[in-house]
Image 1: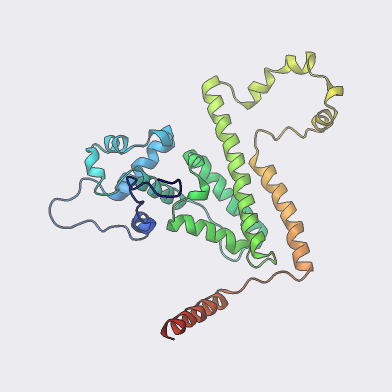
Image 2: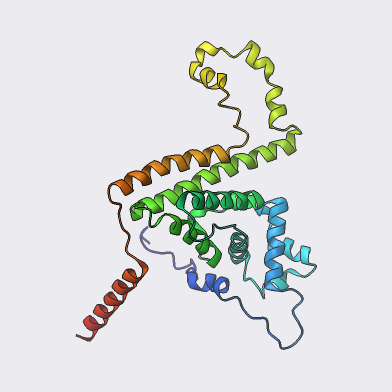
Length: 282
Protein backbone atom coordinates (compact mmCIF):
# COMPACT_ATOMS: atom_id res chain seq x y z
CA UNK A 1 0.00 0.00 0.00
CA UNK A 2 1.45 3.41 -0.97
CA UNK A 3 1.71 6.29 1.47
CA UNK A 4 -0.96 8.17 -0.49
CA UNK A 5 -3.59 5.47 -0.09
CA UNK A 6 -5.84 5.53 3.00
CA UNK A 7 -5.71 2.57 5.34
CA UNK A 8 -9.03 0.69 4.90
CA UNK A 9 -8.91 -0.33 8.56
CA UNK A 10 -9.14 3.32 9.67
CA UNK A 11 -12.77 4.31 10.19
CA UNK A 12 -13.93 7.36 8.26
CA UNK A 13 -14.48 10.43 10.42
CA UNK A 14 -18.06 11.40 11.13
CA UNK A 15 -19.33 14.47 9.26
CA UNK A 16 -18.73 17.61 11.31
CA UNK A 17 -22.34 18.65 10.75
CA UNK A 18 -23.44 15.65 12.81
CA UNK A 19 -21.04 16.59 15.61
CA UNK A 20 -22.14 20.21 15.89
CA UNK A 21 -25.86 19.86 15.20
CA UNK A 22 -26.82 19.55 18.92
CA UNK A 23 -25.10 22.87 19.64
CA UNK A 24 -27.42 24.70 17.27
CA UNK A 25 -30.53 22.60 17.77
CA UNK A 26 -30.38 21.01 21.25
CA UNK A 27 -32.41 17.79 21.36
CA UNK A 28 -35.79 18.10 23.07
CA UNK A 29 -36.22 15.80 26.07
CA UNK A 30 -38.74 13.07 25.46
CA UNK A 31 -42.02 13.34 27.35
CA UNK A 32 -42.67 9.61 27.06
CA UNK A 33 -41.65 7.10 29.67
CA UNK A 34 -39.74 7.94 32.82
CA UNK A 35 -38.44 11.50 33.22
CA UNK A 36 -34.70 11.74 32.57
CA UNK A 37 -32.63 11.81 35.76
CA UNK A 38 -30.45 14.61 34.39
CA UNK A 39 -30.70 17.07 31.52
CA UNK A 40 -28.16 17.88 28.81
CA UNK A 41 -27.76 21.33 30.37
CA UNK A 42 -26.98 19.81 33.77
CA UNK A 43 -24.39 17.50 32.22
CA UNK A 44 -22.61 20.39 30.50
CA UNK A 45 -22.74 22.62 33.59
CA UNK A 46 -21.31 19.81 35.74
CA UNK A 47 -18.45 19.29 33.28
CA UNK A 48 -17.67 23.02 33.25
CA UNK A 49 -17.65 23.08 37.06
CA UNK A 50 -15.16 20.19 37.17
CA UNK A 51 -12.90 21.87 34.62
CA UNK A 52 -13.06 25.19 36.49
CA UNK A 53 -12.05 23.49 39.74
CA UNK A 54 -9.56 20.85 38.58
CA UNK A 55 -8.62 21.49 34.95
CA UNK A 56 -9.65 19.99 31.65
CA UNK A 57 -7.85 16.68 32.23
CA UNK A 58 -10.19 15.99 35.16
CA UNK A 59 -13.23 15.97 32.87
CA UNK A 60 -14.37 12.55 31.76
CA UNK A 61 -17.74 10.94 31.23
CA UNK A 62 -17.15 9.01 34.45
CA UNK A 63 -16.18 12.06 36.56
CA UNK A 64 -19.15 14.06 35.31
CA UNK A 65 -21.53 11.19 35.99
CA UNK A 66 -20.08 10.81 39.48
CA UNK A 67 -20.65 14.50 40.23
CA UNK A 68 -24.29 14.17 39.15
CA UNK A 69 -24.85 10.94 41.07
CA UNK A 70 -25.71 8.89 38.00
CA UNK A 71 -24.09 6.12 36.00
CA UNK A 72 -21.81 7.04 33.11
CA UNK A 73 -24.16 5.42 30.61
CA UNK A 74 -26.82 7.97 31.55
CA UNK A 75 -24.69 10.72 30.04
CA UNK A 76 -24.50 9.08 26.64
CA UNK A 77 -28.17 9.83 26.02
CA UNK A 78 -27.20 13.53 26.10
CA UNK A 79 -23.67 13.61 24.61
CA UNK A 80 -22.15 10.81 22.50
CA UNK A 81 -18.66 11.17 24.00
CA UNK A 82 -16.03 13.41 25.54
CA UNK A 83 -15.30 15.32 22.31
CA UNK A 84 -18.93 16.35 21.98
CA UNK A 85 -19.03 17.17 25.69
CA UNK A 86 -16.00 19.45 25.28
CA UNK A 87 -17.70 21.19 22.33
CA UNK A 88 -20.73 21.90 24.51
CA UNK A 89 -18.53 23.06 27.41
CA UNK A 90 -16.75 25.60 25.21
CA UNK A 91 -20.02 26.91 23.83
CA UNK A 92 -21.48 27.14 27.34
CA UNK A 93 -18.45 29.10 28.55
CA UNK A 94 -18.59 31.55 25.65
CA UNK A 95 -22.24 32.23 26.43
CA UNK A 96 -21.00 34.19 29.48
CA UNK A 97 -18.80 36.67 27.58
CA UNK A 98 -19.67 40.29 28.32
CA UNK A 99 -19.81 41.74 24.79
CA UNK A 100 -19.83 45.47 23.96
CA UNK A 101 -23.11 47.19 23.18
CA UNK A 102 -23.75 47.83 19.46
CA UNK A 103 -23.01 51.37 18.35
CA UNK A 104 -20.04 52.08 20.63
CA UNK A 105 -17.04 53.80 18.97
CA UNK A 106 -14.48 51.25 17.90
CA UNK A 107 -11.89 51.92 20.65
CA UNK A 108 -14.10 51.56 23.77
CA UNK A 109 -15.90 48.69 22.03
CA UNK A 110 -12.67 46.81 21.32
CA UNK A 111 -11.41 47.41 24.85
CA UNK A 112 -14.70 46.04 26.21
CA UNK A 113 -14.42 43.06 23.84
CA UNK A 114 -10.83 42.32 24.95
CA UNK A 115 -11.74 42.74 28.62
CA UNK A 116 -14.68 40.37 28.20
CA UNK A 117 -12.36 37.77 26.69
CA UNK A 118 -9.85 38.29 29.52
CA UNK A 119 -12.58 37.77 32.12
CA UNK A 120 -13.77 34.64 30.28
CA UNK A 121 -10.29 33.09 30.38
CA UNK A 122 -9.84 34.03 34.04
CA UNK A 123 -13.19 32.42 34.96
CA UNK A 124 -12.51 29.33 32.84
CA UNK A 125 -8.70 28.93 32.60
CA UNK A 126 -9.13 25.47 31.07
CA UNK A 127 -10.07 27.26 27.83
CA UNK A 128 -6.36 28.03 27.48
CA UNK A 129 -5.85 24.30 26.87
CA UNK A 130 -8.31 24.29 23.96
CA UNK A 131 -6.88 24.94 20.49
CA UNK A 132 -8.39 28.29 19.49
CA UNK A 133 -7.76 27.51 15.83
CA UNK A 134 -10.11 24.53 16.14
CA UNK A 135 -12.85 25.82 18.40
CA UNK A 136 -16.19 24.11 17.88
CA UNK A 137 -18.53 25.52 15.22
CA UNK A 138 -20.88 26.69 17.95
CA UNK A 139 -23.36 29.59 18.18
CA UNK A 140 -21.85 31.41 21.15
CA UNK A 141 -18.32 31.07 19.74
CA UNK A 142 -19.59 32.54 16.47
CA UNK A 143 -21.37 35.35 18.35
CA UNK A 144 -18.11 36.26 20.09
CA UNK A 145 -16.10 36.37 16.86
CA UNK A 146 -18.89 38.22 15.05
CA UNK A 147 -18.89 40.92 17.74
CA UNK A 148 -15.15 41.47 17.23
CA UNK A 149 -15.45 41.74 13.46
CA UNK A 150 -18.40 44.13 13.74
CA UNK A 151 -16.26 46.52 15.79
CA UNK A 152 -13.63 46.95 13.06
CA UNK A 153 -15.35 46.14 9.78
CA UNK A 154 -16.26 49.75 8.93
CA UNK A 155 -13.19 51.53 10.34
CA UNK A 156 -11.39 51.76 6.98
CA UNK A 157 -9.16 48.74 7.55
CA UNK A 158 -8.95 46.15 4.80
CA UNK A 159 -10.78 42.85 5.27
CA UNK A 160 -7.47 41.09 5.96
CA UNK A 161 -6.49 43.73 8.51
CA UNK A 162 -9.79 43.25 10.34
CA UNK A 163 -9.19 39.51 10.62
CA UNK A 164 -5.51 39.93 11.57
CA UNK A 165 -6.24 42.62 14.16
CA UNK A 166 -8.88 40.56 15.97
CA UNK A 167 -6.41 37.67 15.93
CA UNK A 168 -3.75 39.90 17.51
CA UNK A 169 -6.23 40.99 20.20
CA UNK A 170 -7.01 37.33 20.94
CA UNK A 171 -3.31 36.45 21.11
CA UNK A 172 -2.57 39.39 23.41
CA UNK A 173 -5.36 38.46 25.81
CA UNK A 174 -4.44 34.77 25.75
CA UNK A 175 -0.79 35.58 26.50
CA UNK A 176 -1.79 37.75 29.45
CA UNK A 177 -4.22 35.11 30.71
CA UNK A 178 -1.56 32.38 30.48
CA UNK A 179 0.85 34.52 32.51
CA UNK A 180 -1.82 35.21 35.12
CA UNK A 181 -2.76 31.53 35.32
CA UNK A 182 0.89 30.57 35.77
CA UNK A 183 1.22 33.15 38.55
CA UNK A 184 -1.90 31.71 40.22
CA UNK A 185 -0.41 28.22 40.06
CA UNK A 186 2.94 29.34 41.54
CA UNK A 187 1.19 31.25 44.31
CA UNK A 188 -0.76 28.14 45.27
CA UNK A 189 2.22 25.76 45.09
CA UNK A 190 4.88 28.04 46.63
CA UNK A 191 2.71 29.92 49.10
CA UNK A 192 4.02 33.36 48.10
CA UNK A 193 2.41 36.08 46.01
CA UNK A 194 4.12 38.11 43.28
CA UNK A 195 5.33 40.89 45.59
CA UNK A 196 6.66 38.47 48.21
CA UNK A 197 8.54 36.46 45.57
CA UNK A 198 10.40 39.49 44.23
CA UNK A 199 11.05 40.84 47.73
CA UNK A 200 12.84 37.56 48.48
CA UNK A 201 15.30 38.21 45.63
CA UNK A 202 16.74 41.43 47.10
CA UNK A 203 20.14 39.81 47.77
CA UNK A 204 20.52 39.00 44.09
CA UNK A 205 19.94 42.59 42.99
CA UNK A 206 22.30 43.98 45.62
CA UNK A 207 25.16 41.48 45.33
CA UNK A 208 25.00 39.77 41.91
CA UNK A 209 23.23 41.96 39.36
CA UNK A 210 25.60 44.21 37.40
CA UNK A 211 23.79 47.32 36.05
CA UNK A 212 26.60 48.07 33.58
CA UNK A 213 26.08 44.69 31.92
CA UNK A 214 22.35 45.32 31.44
CA UNK A 215 22.09 49.08 30.85
CA UNK A 216 18.72 49.07 29.04
CA UNK A 217 17.13 47.04 31.80
CA UNK A 218 18.61 49.37 34.41
CA UNK A 219 17.33 52.49 32.66
CA UNK A 220 13.81 51.06 32.43
CA UNK A 221 13.89 49.96 36.06
CA UNK A 222 15.01 53.44 37.20
CA UNK A 223 11.75 54.98 35.93
CA UNK A 224 9.49 52.25 37.30
CA UNK A 225 8.76 50.50 34.00
CA UNK A 226 8.57 47.06 35.63
CA UNK A 227 6.11 48.01 38.35
CA UNK A 228 3.06 46.85 36.37
CA UNK A 229 4.53 43.49 35.40
CA UNK A 230 2.23 41.63 37.79
CA UNK A 231 -0.92 43.02 36.08
CA UNK A 232 -0.17 42.34 32.41
CA UNK A 233 -3.60 42.83 30.85
CA UNK A 234 -4.22 46.57 31.21
CA UNK A 235 -0.90 47.96 29.93
CA UNK A 236 -0.73 45.40 27.12
CA UNK A 237 -4.21 46.08 25.78
CA UNK A 238 -3.75 49.87 26.09
CA UNK A 239 -0.53 49.70 24.08
CA UNK A 240 -2.23 47.58 21.43
CA UNK A 241 -5.17 50.00 21.15
CA UNK A 242 -2.80 52.98 20.87
CA UNK A 243 -1.01 51.30 17.97
CA UNK A 244 -4.25 50.30 16.30
CA UNK A 245 -5.55 53.86 16.56
CA UNK A 246 -2.61 55.06 14.48
CA UNK A 247 -3.31 52.37 11.87
CA UNK A 248 -7.01 53.25 11.63
CA UNK A 249 -6.31 57.00 11.49
CA UNK A 250 -3.92 56.42 8.59
CA UNK A 251 -6.39 54.15 6.78
CA UNK A 252 -9.16 56.73 7.10
CA UNK A 253 -6.87 59.55 5.98
CA UNK A 254 -6.10 57.54 2.84
CA UNK A 255 -9.78 57.00 2.10
CA UNK A 256 -10.20 53.63 3.78
CA UNK A 257 -10.90 50.24 2.21
CA UNK A 258 -14.68 49.77 2.07
CA UNK A 259 -15.79 46.19 2.67
CA UNK A 260 -18.99 45.16 0.80
CA UNK A 261 -22.19 45.51 2.79
CA UNK A 262 -24.16 42.47 3.86
CA UNK A 263 -26.80 43.25 1.20
CA UNK A 264 -24.13 43.47 -1.51
CA UNK A 265 -22.62 40.15 -0.40
CA UNK A 266 -26.00 38.40 -0.48
CA UNK A 267 -26.78 39.87 -3.92
CA UNK A 268 -23.49 38.50 -5.25
CA UNK A 269 -24.18 35.14 -3.63
CA UNK A 270 -27.65 34.94 -5.16
CA UNK A 271 -26.29 35.91 -8.59
CA UNK A 272 -23.62 33.21 -8.35
CA UNK A 273 -26.25 30.58 -7.49
CA UNK A 274 -28.38 31.69 -10.44
CA UNK A 275 -25.39 31.33 -12.76
CA UNK A 276 -24.73 27.82 -11.47
CA UNK A 277 -28.37 26.82 -12.02
CA UNK A 278 -28.35 28.22 -15.55
CA UNK A 279 -25.09 26.44 -16.33
CA UNK A 280 -26.55 23.17 -15.04
CA UNK A 281 -29.63 23.51 -17.21
CA UNK A 282 -27.65 24.36 -20.34
